[in-house]
Length: 116
Image (cartoon, rainbow, N blue to C red):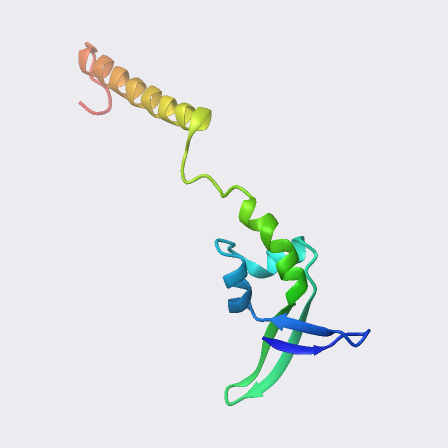
């Protein structure tokens, strides 16, 4: 963790994305989550053999402040459940039944259509 001095002379820690991920397990996009929760961040630019690159660092105290709320938030549902899942299955069954009824009527028709 990289530390610096804040405006009042207090020590401030800045965390990289991998460090933030250890405090926020299960959170997908770190930057979007940080911005949505008011976490202060800064961008450091450095030169390397492959050209300039940027590293985003997040304020350690803000990350720790937000962490309990993120771990207690319910996760996204794993799949279709409840009424949405029931309606999805019902729609599939209606389509299969309609196709079967149409095929049966076509096979029983006296006049031959396009397929015969």
